[in-house]
Length: 408
Image (cartoon, rainbow, N blue to C red; front, side):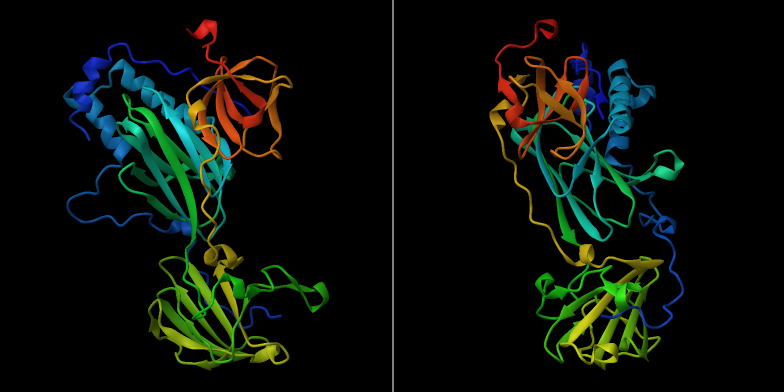
């Protein structure tokens, strides 16, 4: 997939806007589980105070400042708003975690990425200025509804002053990072991945997890609806959400506990417990000890472990809720950021994702110039003379100190 963009241009009457800008700154689910919680799409994404009204998202407030008392946008402001919408419509794709250094020019439409994130992950999105870069930069996160022709639903906003944190509830996410109208320089973009839940077994971590979600059971007649966390008999297990308890005993799960959080639309299942310290209807708090690891139910012939399940209308993989991902650090020729380069002797493949496995959207012939907009490990994000944008293997480009003649 290629991305068509308009080459960035410096607004002609930029000076008249600067004054305005200066004003802004072996087991399975055993019992019938609790009634299905509300779907994540039905839950509010923010808490709205009674008075005063909620503050506008940073980008919306910025647009309002550009309008000022005239209540209309100058020509450069209209072009900037359109560039941001165009970036969303022609987004590239990226795995997470990610780390990319980007080059920003005045009037830039920004970077838009469809994030390959998993339900249960916590994304920490940060944008940091480098080398004296100055000016506002806006971060917006959207949910994509493919069933409604990629309709977008705004989830959260931020800026360069503080990281934006979001717990992934499922579906595809679209991230846009757009600099302010007069912002220029280099910025460092990172999306780190943390677990959204604490670990449910005291003193253990992801290394104690075995028997992954979806593993075959009963000769392939059913699937494992959780993960098994192995620990010595009697190790404490804790609530990792605030919620209401339902306890019970069954043939497969042995002594078990459900914890349901209606606000978040999530239910957790703890099975094979040797002891249970809570009762049905009781409200527990995150971090409270609810039982001890054991081998009750159909785990009698195995080593002691906790079967831990996560349900959001149905069973989902608990691993992303519990496992973090190592941070990805920037790598590559940072001195090439913002420079023009050329495809090497063998040409280059322009891809919609920084991966060798991603299909090539088009082939860049030998000697064709490309401007480096972003640098990440092993790849450059580039724009061609015709406006197409995508990722290219860093080794496929060679340096050139001359700007293409048609763009001088």
